[in-house]
Image (cartoon, rainbow over all chains, first blue to last red; front, side, top):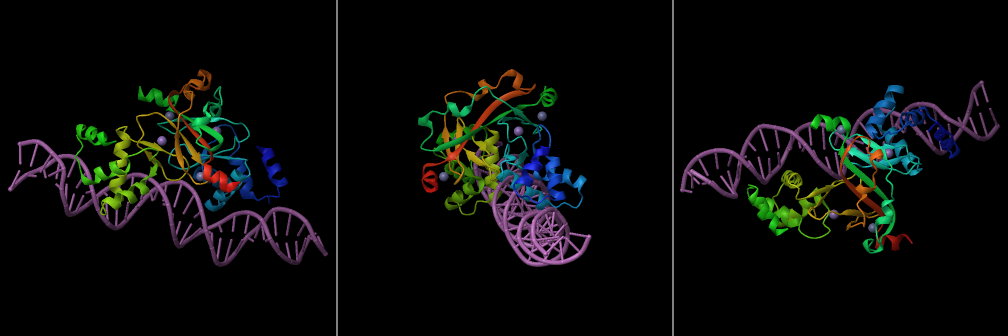
Length: 140
Length: 140
DNA sequence: TCCTACGATGGACACAGTCCAAGTCAAGAA
DNA sequence: TTCTTGACTTGGACTGTGTCCATCGTAGGA
Ligand SMILES: [Mn+2]
Ligand SMILES: [Mn+2]
Ligand SMILES: [Zn+2]
Ligand SMILES: [Zn+2]
């Protein structure tokens, strides 16, 4: 993710402390933060960063294909920096935790032509729902 | 869907004109309306119905398993009365149209044990994204 | 017909996201 | 190094979606 900053500079991005901090917050594995969570963490590193800037930067990263937007519930969208490794999501129905998963088959292959209704189908996202280990424990 | 009202009566539901109208609006195939769309249509049949009642009724129908909530984008949730016939969704990225589809394989079967990370996985939803016939045309 | 607990109502509130006018500053030019 | 300028940031207003609650109304049993 640190080469992300390089790539962005290459694309003509002006490097501001705000953008650096947002990129830093998004660094890591299994990061699926909401915009407000990104803002909260960014504000610990750069207290005066505004919500609008976080939204702007996230939106730009999404347009550039560097970050993926995931809508697992009807709540806040989550931002996923793991954009260059296709994967799907396993979501805990109780606590909302999100994990990356890699199914053994591409679900696109399992949608027959007669089930496409003339659509030009570009992608398939799978959301697996269940209980994470600690919520399974708690519910038992 | 008309037997829905019977089932609800059986469950001890008090039959009000508001609930009848919401059920009526949800009747049909490929219905994937937002709460506000349900409210708008219901209000044509029963002008004084309130938004709160529509939300309450939809929420109850979801808890009873009679209606499914779908979050295709980060926008408004959609309500799907086709709850007794498992299916997935094909969404137009441009206009938001939603179609029911039936893949040839259950995606749950394609998530190997070592990709479950201790979760108790209960269900899998697939969202296929692409362009509907008319948006494909328009974009060409 | 009467009672009353369940349901409906509308308005306030909370949360997620967008938009804008004004101020600031990164980075190229000189 | 300083200057200049347009891209970027900011706070706050605004919209859309959803929840909550006190109060009122009524479905349906006695
Ligand atoms: Mn992910
Ligand atoms: Mn459906
Ligand atoms: Zn959990
Ligand atoms: Zn379309």
